[in-house]
Structures are given as structure tokens and as C-alpha cells.
Image (cartoon, one colour):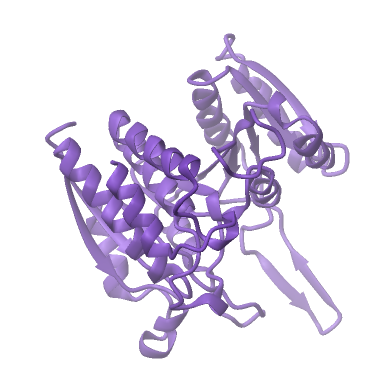
Length: 339
């Protein structure tokens, strides 16, 4: 593993994406140098700004670049609304490479406002099905239908992924659902969850309704370890999870499949701050920490985590969202320096 050459694609995205990625690259370079890692970065275009030039937010050249790479680091990209608008760049990549597990850690960080001082949980979101399957259509002008697709295969693999993750942590996995209302679809998910759980006798498995979880993430977040759920529910509660530990500016994310992965912050592109070198790069830098962990470089991942925590604890170089005045690029440089 140490001598493996990793080809990593990089897509800066839109809005604040280029600033965030530019601030993250020095951190990657510092890790490569410190741990003598063979990681080649190749940059490709992607995002709303590509539509006028290529007619798509995922140009064919970029897609080919992704197919030649081992994984991708992606900055936030703008996705317009409307029935006739282009699909999300992230969703296209997830579907193309079958990145079925969206992993979003929510952890209390030094000197960052957190609801409680000891929050450390991970939300695992099924990434390819549910209400985000993209199966929507109109019936005339007065009705629209969206299909919530749940399959046994999709449930089994995300549950197994979540149980494996829980086994490496505090050995507690909670299935989040709305089976009292969505009796058939979440009924299948729940059946599969407890069925897979029989293979993991060392992991405590329980379940809770989505609306209850939204309350308990506020009242007792320290009691959770790993939560697994379907696409829409996971999207919502993971943003809540990020907010209780400081906001989406410090919320990292990974999209993982059997053979490929994408690492990106959970926040959007914030177009109003385009080119201002203002927003927080910590979420993206922590996403890169997840990349090193996925690659098997645990020491490198720990180094990134410690560097981020040191900079936050010192409190001298922070962006506006954390009460500081530093630029995005300055935070990236400071974290790289700690490594």
C-alpha cells in the first residue's frame, strides 16, 4: 500500500469551490512530503460554469479523467432548480461510479461552538436510491409524482457498510426510518437491517423514527455512534448533525463505492462569496483526511486531523464563520504548516 501510486482527480466546482480547493492543495502536498506518498493530482472541469462551454456540468473529458483515476476530490458545485435543469454534478458522479455510501462524520472540534462537548457520531446515508432516485414525472399540469425506490440489494450493502463501520468505533448502530408511515419501503429496509445485524453480534443494533432523531440529535447527540438511513432522510439529518458541531463549514463528507470514492464538503457553493477567498476550507480538508483513511494511510489521516484541531484550538487563523478574520487560503496554509 505504501508504494502504491494513487491517481486522484480534482474538480474545483463553482462559486467558492475554487478557493476551497486551492486552500486544500497545500495540505495534500504537505502530507505527501511528510509521509512520502505517491499521489498524483490531475485537475478537471466540472460545475455550472461548464454548461455554456460544453452543454453539461460534467464534460466528457472530465468523466474520462475520473474513469482513469482512483478517486476524486470535488469542491462544491452549483445545482440549479427546475424540472428542466441539469442534474447535480455530485449525483451524476455517484451514479456513474455506484458510490452507494455517503459518510458524514459529526464531531466536536476544539474552539468551535458545539451543542455539547463530546459529540462523535457518523451518519451513513444510502446514496443511490430512495426519493433521490430521480424518477419524477408530471401528470398533466396539476399533478407530479416522485418514486421512492428501496431495493433489497441497496439496503443490504449500505447496512453491511454501516455495521462494518460501527464495529471499528463504539459498536452501536441506529437505523433511522419512518416505517410507521412508509410501511412497505422502510418496512423492507428495517427487515434487511436486522437481518444483516445477525451477522454482527458484537454490534448493538436499534432503530428510531426520523422525526424523533431530529429531536434527539439536539437533546442527546452524545448517545449516538453510527446512524444509517435512506437518501433523503440522510441528507436532512446530516446537515443537522453538522450544525450541532459548528456548521456545514466544518462538515466533511465521503461518497464510497466498492471500487471508487469521491470526497467533498457537505456544504454548497455559496455563489455570493465567489472569488472572495473568504469561506472556511476545514470541511474540505477534513474530507481529504477521510480520503487518506480510505487509502489506508491512517497516520496521514491522523496528522491532518491533529493539524486542523491545533489550528482551531490556537484560534489565531480562523475564517469568519468561526469568529475570525482570516482568508480561506490563510487557513489552508496554516494547517499545512502544522503538518
